[in-house]
Length: 301
Length: 52
Ligand code: SF4
Ligand code: SF4
Ligand code: SF4
Image (cartoon, rainbow over all chains, first blue to last red; front, top):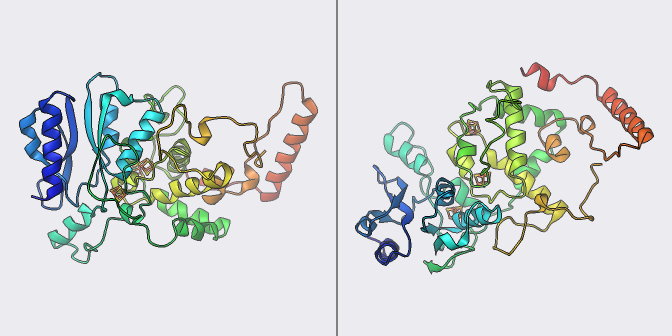
């Protein structure tokens, strides 16, 4: 058992033992060596189930939404991306700080369980299993930004190279090329909504995609409705996306959702910035698209 | 929004935003004329339509 796992168990046990919290969010070992899955424990003796290893890739902050109407106190382990998710929910007033005890872990980067599963299955042995997962290779903020207690060691950004390189490549294409590029991608989408469900910034109680009167977006999986879905989803998280990469990771058909999110991160940065979403919790702070200033840019008018 | 549609391969001429008060009849007429001119220039849109 690693030292971090031991520390995680010890803290969870302590919090439940002295009834500081009612539930602890963490990760446990899944059915395979290359899977660790979210777990929610309520009894001190269950602390033995917790682990922290290189497959704890899930962003746990999303699961707070299942608890937003209760009054239970929650202990939650967070990596860099999870902690920004927590700030997202606090800033969006979906949760109160008093209900949370946050244990931060400096994140060394996580591996991709799917690549490891494929490699182990023998179906596709040519997987890159040595390095970090796609989302972690792009990570700029691996250290928790909000916590009551901190574990692990301070990490350097995992991103190598330029953050917006791929976005710039697409921007450099012609209009027709861009349309073809995205039409090919969006025609694959099966509208399973996994990318929305896993997203911590998608926290509306009534989602526009579920409304039927009026029905804003067709339910069919044709290219036009798929495009409409992706335009709206991306715009709705603009300026609030915490770049956790969970949407892209959850997509069963490999839609590169981060290409869309990063375009808006780049633009919000340029137009309203410099701005990085949910990097710290400040009293009354709002993301740029949720406030009005007389000097906001209006060159689209 | 305009930037994003452009990124996805839509012609920027198709998207307009304007701030017009209820009393600005002339401005409304001007904006609509400009929209129509811009859209005429890029021609009919097949993109979203043929995709259905
Ligand atoms: S995105 Fe960053 S903080 Fe999140 S798991 Fe990857 S390396 Fe860790
Ligand atoms: S997860 Fe992928 S397939 Fe499912 S709705 Fe999102 S983009 Fe489409
Ligand atoms: S849009 Fe994707 S990357 Fe951004 S917060 Fe949601 S799940 Fe994370």
